[in-house]
Length: 68
Image 1 (tube, helix red, strand yellow):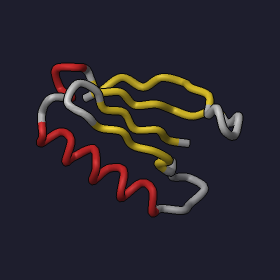
Image 2 (cartoon, one colour):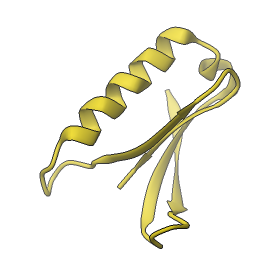
Image 3 (spheres, one colour):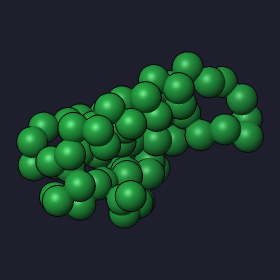
Image 4 (cartoon, helix red, strand yellow):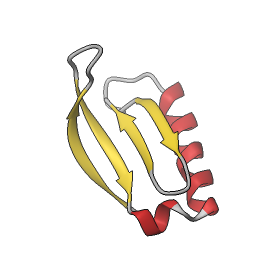
């Protein structure tokens, strides 16, 4: 569904994972909904063995999810 990159949070200096949808997939409203659902679920969980979602950005040409 997307590509995951290693990134650096500019505010905290923490290493993060950035999941980016391809431009073609980012234009699909159903995939936006799925990504929002993934963000909502992952941001509410708090467990040492589960990655927490930190940020989400969606627009017509790009979509990304930032995770611990």
